[in-house]
Every structure is written in C-alpha cells, then in structure tokens.
Image (cartoon, each protein chain N blue to C red):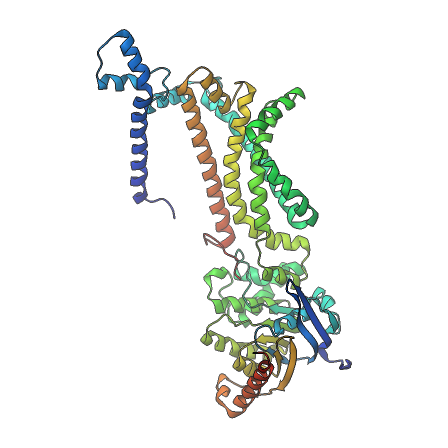
Length: 265
Length: 298
C-alpha cells in the first residue's frame, strides 16, 4: 500500500475498494485503487463502461461510500470536503433546472451557500463570461443548444470558485465538432484558472489532448492498470492530434485498454 | 394552443347535434304518456301534435331543451338571488362548500405527500390507508358524516366541506408524491455536491419539480370537490344547495328543476376546472419562460 504523506496532494487514495450489493450478488466496482493527484494537474480517468471510473470520481465527491481504503480530498475526508464545498462537479448531462434562467442556474449554488445578491451577480457574470455565454443570462435552458447548456453547467461549477473540479464525461452527449470546440475551451480555462481537474471520459483523443496524466482503468473488478504522463506544451491546439508524439500516447492508452479487456471477452 | 376561429365550427356542430338528439329523445321518451292520454280522451292526433305536446309537458320524463332554458331563466334571472327558489342562491351555497373542501383537501393532500416523501415510516404505513379510504363509496359515507356532525350540533358548511375534502385530498396526495419524487438522481446529487440542506432541496428542487403534477391533480380535485359537495347536500333533506335541488326535483317529479340544477352544476364544474387550467398556464409560464411543458433537463 502506498504511504500517503505528500503535502501538496489534492487527492490521495490508498487501497480503495467499493462493492455494490445487487440481487445477483456482490459486484466489485473498485478494487485496491491507489492514486495521488497533485495540485494543478489535469487527470483523466479512461476505460470502458463498467470500469469504475465514474464510481471512483463519485467516491472522491462523497456521492458513494467506499467499502474499504483511505481517501483524502484537500487533506480532509470526502465528506468534509463536500461540506466545505471544496469541489465543483460537472455531470454527464447539463442537469440545469428548467424553471430557472441561465443566470439563476449559475447562482443556485451561491444561493445555497448564502452569498449576498451582489456577490451572486458578480460571480455569475464573471463565469458566464469565462465560458463565452455573456448575453444569455435571461434565457431558459431549453432555449440553448446542448453544448451551451453544458457550458452553463461548467460556469455553475466554477462559480463557487473551487480549487478542484470533477468532470464526469461532460461532453459525452455532444457531437464531435462541439466536443472539439469545448475541449479547446476547457484547456484554456484550466490553464487560466490553474485548477486541479479530474476528468472522466471514454474518448482516447479527448483524454490525451486535455490531460497532464491519464489513468487507464479496466473493468471487473474496476482497477487502475496504467498511469501515463502526458505533458504537451501548454499552448497546444487541436492540431497536435496529428503529431507522432500524440499518436504514440494514444496508442499506449489503447493498448492499456485492450490489455484490460483481453481475458474478459 | 389557444382557441382560434377554425375551432368554433366543429364545436357548434356538436352542440347542434346534441340539441337535435335531445329533442328527438324527448319525443321518444314522453310520447307513451301522451299517446295514453290521447287514447283515453279518444282524440285524433298527428305526429306534429305529438311532438308539440311532448315538448311542452309539465312533468316530462325528459323535458325539451327550451323548457330547461325557460326554467334556468326563471330560477336564475327572474328570481331574486336571496330567494330560496333562486338557483344562484343554491349554486353559491354549493360553491362555497366546494371551495372550502377544495382548500382543505389540497392542504391535507400536500401535507400528506410531504410526510410520505420525507418520512419512510409514513410511506409504508399511510399509503395503504389512503388507498383504502377511496374504496369506500362516498354515497354510503356522506349521510353518516352529516348525521354524526348534526348530532354534535355542527351543520351547514363544514360537514359538507369535509366530504369534499375527503374526495379531493387523494389525487393531490398521489400527484404530489409523484411530483416531489420526480427530480432525477442527477439533480439530487447536484444538490448534495452543494451540501444543500433538506429544506433547500425541498424549496429549490422538489417543490418546483412537483408543480406540473400538482396542477394535473388540482383539476381532478376541484371537480371531485363539487361532486362531494352535491352528494353531501342530498341527505340534508332538501335544505339548500344544488344537491338538495336535485333531490326535491326528483321528490316532486319536477324534471325541469333537476335538469336546470344539473346544467348549473356542470357549468360550474367546467368553469372551476378551466380556472385551474388558466392558473396552471400562468404559473408554468412564470416558471419556465413560456415553455408549455417544462421537462427536467437530464
């Protein structure tokens, strides 16, 4: 088991296991997971469906309770971190409240935290601008495209100004052109805000393009089979996806995914 | 969609058809009595004569539409509203107990639904009783309630409103339970990531999600509430209200009276349901910026 003592670590996981009890018996969703994420990293979890990548992130966000192991987020238990609103969470779907305008959706967490009206206004304005949605404050979610809705939900997660951002396949439901565009925007956003991002995806190019580190996972039981460093220049554009260096890392991720699958089917 | 000009022709056609069928039915149902009379008096008669006579009987089995219209004019327009013969007077009495019962029933329904959604024990223990309560025929229950309350010295509005409440809390409870549980697990998780309190989740997520369900239930509830009020007026022995008018009409064979009261009740019920409909449109408009049917984005 890895010894945890790095002061700078935002996320520390040691010997984490999580079993779900279903009517067909116990399913091991995560088994013996060790992971440390440093401040300012962009870490992607990649793997086929059922490999526990979303479950791992939900454990970090205190939306699932692990069966065994130690987990620390910002030096606290996930539960304490959640209570201190230490992270922002972006779901697979925009998860906007349809009866609230764009602006009111962004201020929702701020209202819950009891921020003043002026602060709510200022923060929602700032982060809607950051995701290029100024001018849409008074629109309702159904008046926006899927990509714009997801940007609203990113602005909402950023508005509480967390140092840590969890993103669970945020662009999974979008078309490829929109996805490329948002990947580019997210990269700029990460560089501008210096936040720690934990990102779940099943798209290899997305993971390689965005991440500073890629965690490759495999199902039944969910576990980490490879961790790949991936430090492309900060000013990279989508064009680097054609370079040999990019393709080499993508190849290694793909091999990892295949190895995890081989004895399974 | 709002009603436009193109919709009025089919509506008028249907109304015309109903009136024609009604007149024909009046001849069909009333003619045996009239023919009997003709035979006794030994007079010659034509079909025109028969039709005219069946449309102007004093105590017809089925009075003709114009007879009911005359009765409505007589009891609504010609009578002073404070008169015991005025249908407006009786309708107002029924309406007041309908509305009181509706308010009580809706409140009870909402309170029960919140209890069921938030307290596991109530979910298990209350729901079977609520369903059982609705299997008891209201016609059997109403006289008992009226008599018991009467023995306790309570009569008039409250016992009637209680019958209405008994009928209309049910759809509200069922609708609100479904509505309060309608937010997707993702939205519930979202609120958890904000460390929102139970009260904040209720106010900002569950209650707004339940609004469309609430209005669907309210439309059923208000119609049931009127049924409850009329049923509750039957055993009071023809004192006041549309129910007592129906009863005295059938005591004295005054079918005109029955039909007039029936039409007033139907118009009242339709108006109440459409008022709720307008209220719904207004509230949903305010809630979702004009989207007719807000779906939770998920």
